[in-house]
Amino acid sequence: MKMHIDAETISCGLIAHPSRHSLSPLLQNTISSELGVNMVYTAHDVVPSAGEASNLSLMNAVKGAEALGYRGLNITVPYKTEVIKCLKELDELAERAGAVNTLVRLKSKDGYKGYNTDISGLKRALDADKIEIKGKNAIVIGAGGASRAVCTMLAMNLASSVTILNRTLSKAQALAEAVKNSCGYDSISAHGLNEYMEAFDPEKKYICFQTTTVGMYPDNFSSPIEDEAFFGMLEAAVDVIYNPMKTLFMSKAQSRGVRTA
Ligand code: ATR
Image 1 (cartoon, rainbow, N blue to C red):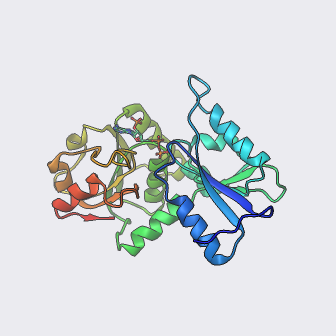
Image 2: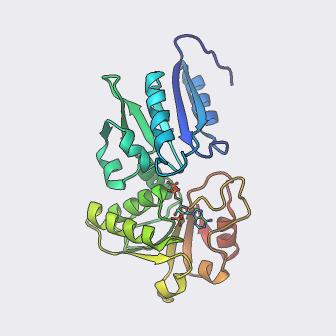
Image 3: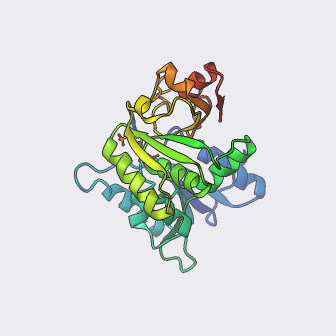
């Protein structure tokens, strides 16, 4: 990749914690170089502030990027929901999802508008892998920002049911309520991460979405659920983690003959 940086170079970047796993700089810089766009994209590890003002460092980072003239930003773990407080405008789909992964500088140059491309991107990836959603029963592991995007995508594409499993039950319950309200979708329920056997009908097969950070580089040898019997209930398993390409969760599903994406 040959890059030319000068005084005209547009700055864009990623805000995350941690950020070292990210392939976004490689992806974005390669594309802009191929397209001849004078842009540089860098990854920023924004460490959450301690104590109650946990989003102070995020606010400072977004304000700092604005002051430095950053044209656009991507936002990922753990800030997809918190970042909404830092925005001037919010796209309708992102509002419904309660999560933002893309910030675009407003034409007025004053602040950013937040978008969610996770939902459309995920649906496109599922279509490419021929994984149907309509009329299917789904399990979503995790209840953070990525999970909310997945649950919104499932509700909007008329999944028959959505069951959220999360380590912290109260967060799963709050997410189920939020999706009910934002999407007018009632077939959604919440359970603790270890309550999966009670939550499922042994006669049915499920599509499972793994949305936690468990198994993400450098934590490659972990899976939020390891029980073989769980994978036996699945017809497809989707992991939103892309580094590593094949997570332990996916390997476990594959060893039970389950399709993965
Ligand atoms: P994102 O915005 O990418 O979804 P997040 O909001 O930080 O990230 O959410 C992370 C998810 O991973 C949460 O569901 C979290 O569970 P809790 O709600 O109980 O915190 C889940 N998670 C993180 N570490 C986990 C672990 N070791 N075991 C199980 N779940 C974990």
